Image 1 (cartoon, rainbow, N blue to C red):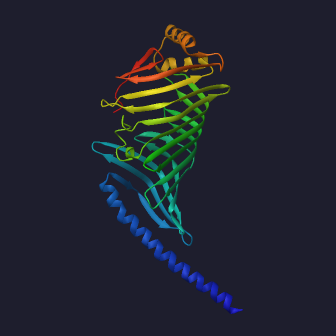
Image 2 (spheres, rainbow, N blue to C red):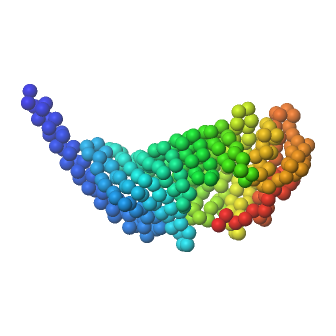
Image 3 (cartoon, helix red, strand yellow):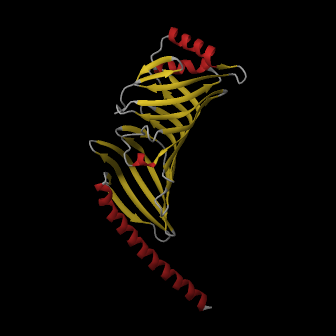
Length: 307
């Protein structure tokens, strides 16, 4: 009767030794990589940090976390009250991040519930990331009941996706637009990761495979390719369609400072040139070229450099 007990105790001792050795190795690896990442412009600072997770996990906790990426004279910074990174001992290449709000991105305050981020890396350098947060409110920009973000680097491409439920966006005339569901699926070259401030280029544009917005029975959809020209202005073309132009115009008008006469003229022209009675949809292309944004044949607004 003592042999099974002895076997269990021996197994526990072996596991504890394995966890301790693996834990020290993982900790030393992270500590060694931090200066390397800092040299590339990626810096993580903590007011207080701690390690743990015995007996089945590796855990790293960072309070008052500041994650900053710097490239030249430009930088992106992310701050959060607390960041907890967790990885299972048997699969250290899959990391779960728990982020407590409020947070901020480049000074823009974000309130949200605990955000969950999953990052899975492969040995060939590809990776997969997904995140989810509830009750997200970006001060003055938008709020949503639930926000999900996805990214994946594979085969030299960067796949991106996002969706939001009950999205509320303030618009320039101080009114509020409520959207029940919004989603986007896009793809670009993985080189965007090396120079995120430069954005997509004409050689490697951001291909928007699907952009959908819905509010009750009303749908808006678009797809196309966009990039930044040498003056850092938005350029490219997107094809769009909606089944209710009357719902869409009050949203677009204040964004592009259209008066009532302009809105009526655009709506009438699009109904004449882009109306498809068979599908009951109105179609038009957005074109951004030489610093000007057009919707169909009409000029909407002059574009300014993004940075």
